[in-house]
Image (cartoon, rainbow, N blue to C red):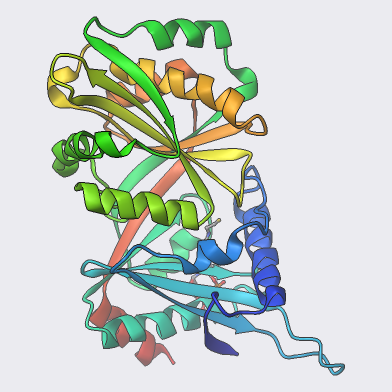
Length: 338
Ligand SMILES: CC(C)(COP(=O)(O)OP(=O)(O)OC[C@H]1O[C@@H](n2cnc3c(N)ncnc32)[C@H](O)[C@@H]1OP(=O)(O)O)[C@@H](O)C(=O)NCCC(=O)NCCS
């Protein structure tokens, strides 16, 4: 049975059952990824940025004769932001290929349509059944990135310490656990705005103005995801010349996520990219001693960043794609399939 579901008020047993399904999906599709933990899972599923909405549904098996609630074997949510609905679907490997994934997408797509949105986007992990699934529903591939993973146990720490110091004269590098301080928020948002058109990825929008940045940091904290920031300041102007962001999620604290890394155009060619990323890894080593891996996503044509990541020890893992579809077409296709 598929029903709308509110993670904020759901029982702890339901949250735990969904987590079991998520971990079964990971074990089947991404066996190298660490399993998720329950910590802040409810907040992860329910907290959103101001102005955004997430609507969720679950597929739950029938209750047992003794009244024990059935397991949650499928989940879909759609995040409504800007003009797009961003979809995420999970089906337990034990019940796949029975049409449940298609039914979950149908229910969510219908709502996105009713809410007046025109397109749906989804992140699809390469080399998993999701590729054939979304293509069968008429989604097309808009963008491909490569995910790379750095195993901290293989890092050459003395070499990294040297890299962190090799930054051009006139810059200094600062580490800010929790996010940039208030007095730097404006300069920080300016640096992000500058590369907005060239380097941004639609489904993971970043924040370009100070208020939105503040909201975005607060949302991350509420979802149990701790941001760390290293930035390079241009001493003469006070500009943020470069920045790198890593988030350590309570749900998988042994594997951190690299978010944006930006070097502002005028400040390229001074070793800032390598120095700030190296400094970040050194800081994380003491701030988050349980951490064993960092994962990052890069456009395949971003050669300079891929080169720096390779020097730091990142190894390409797999494709990570963005797919999209017109909502009207999707609703029509799914309704006529019933
Ligand atoms: C993608 C996913 C949702 C599909 O769920 P499902 O319930 O098995 O999908 P359905 O049974 O509704 O399949 C619909 C159609 O998709 C296509 N399809 C689905 N899985 C497929 C596969 N493994 N190979 C080829 N085609 C496939 C088929 O055309 C299928 O129709 P058919 O069975 O009549 O041939 C499921 O595999 C899943 O949860 N994957 C993980 C997704 C994810 O988010 N991963 C991120 C963390 S790893």
